[in-house]
Image 1: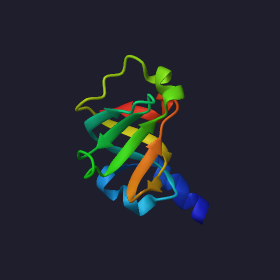
Image 2: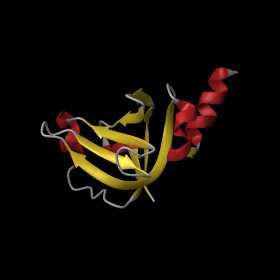
Image 3: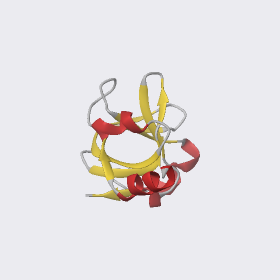
Image 4: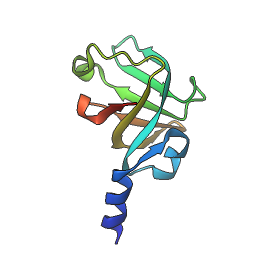
Length: 105
């Protein structure tokens, strides 16, 4: 029964404001990119539905994967990302490695 629930969750996108309900699950989360931050080490942070520290979730692209996202304009776009929701220092994150994890609306 649990496996069926996980499949159903993956078929539908959830809003960034509801992401906290799915910590530890792989789901598709959607929201507007309100802030983009590039760290000194090259990591890219896309803050969704709010600016730091009030974002609902952050889509994280480690430096070694940023080349996979060249040419994508994120600012103020409504995007969806598929991945595992993790909690880090009181915030939520999804790590992105490939373009196939993203869809745009």
